[in-house]
Every structure is written in C-alpha cells, then in structure tokens.
Image (cartoon, rainbow, N blue to C red):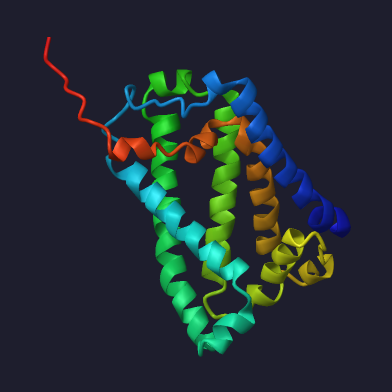
Length: 221
C-alpha cells in the first residue's frame, strides 16, 4: 500500500491532471469556465475572494521553495535550520490564515448565502469544495502542529517529491512522516485528479491581454 500511495498514485494523479486538462481544453473548450456566480451574489466576494487568492499565492510560493529547493542549498547560503524554520513560519502562518479564512468565507457564500447559490451548485462543485477544504485544513493543521519544529519535511517530503519528478520515487522517505502530512499528500493528489473536471481550470487562463485592452464603456439605459 505504501508503494502504491507514494510510488504509483502520484503519477496517476499527475497523468490525469495533465492529460485531462489537455483533453478538456481541446474537446470541451466551450465548457472551459469558472462558472462565475458573481451576478448571483457579489457583495460577499469583497473580502472572501482576495483573501483566498492571496493566501493561495502565498501558500503556492512557500510550497515551491520548501519542496523544490534542497536543504543543502539554503544551508550553503548561510541559512541554518532554525532560521529557515522561523522564516517559513513567518510566511506559512499568515498564508494559512488567509487561505483557510478566505475559503471558509467562500464556503459560507456558496452553501449558506442564498437559495440561488445552492441551485447553481453542482455535485462536482460540492465534491470539489470538500476536497479543497480537507486539503487546506490538513495543511493548516500540519503547519500549526509543527510550530515547535519537531518534524523536518525537507528531509522526507521534499526529497520524496523531487524523486517523483526525477522518475525515481523513493517511497521509503515517507515511512515516518506524521499522519497529518500523509493525509495532506493524499488530498493534493485527489485535488490534481479533480482539477481537469472542475472550475479550477480557470487558473490556467489568466487573461494577460486584460492588462492592456481598451476600457469597455457601459452606458445607462
């Protein structure tokens, strides 16, 4: 089971993530959308939307640094383990608060704001919200529980993930990883599997031309 979870499952998730996304874009391009519900409920997006996306960008950046940058690189740059841990907490805790807080506000808006929102929420949306909630919550719990610094993920999770990218998965690195972090690994894999079939695909379609286009003029009727 350990071999499957950490040596096979990640490749299944990444294959569905890449292949499913390409398939959806090429075959069902007209369905490539966020299914925006802003016209149904706009006021409660004022804080929820920016908090969630700022927290997301902070968490994504922190994960990229923590996972892709080997430990010996930061040590060679003069940053010992204690200093690195303090810096990661300084960025990780605010990111967790913004990410989870913004998501809870979006969750409240989606399921408790109005009947119109409930009617326009599909079963796939419900599954996505559940998986995202468990993913963000487990990451937050892992960050908070590791404030004392008892677990060094850069000696287990990080090299394991890099071994996946090198197509030489070393599942032994995950043997003594705390349960909450193992659960977090499972949830990101499920998120990757769901990605091509949900509204999450919109993050790949950032409209760069939006920054340079002419203003759209709206006139009152």
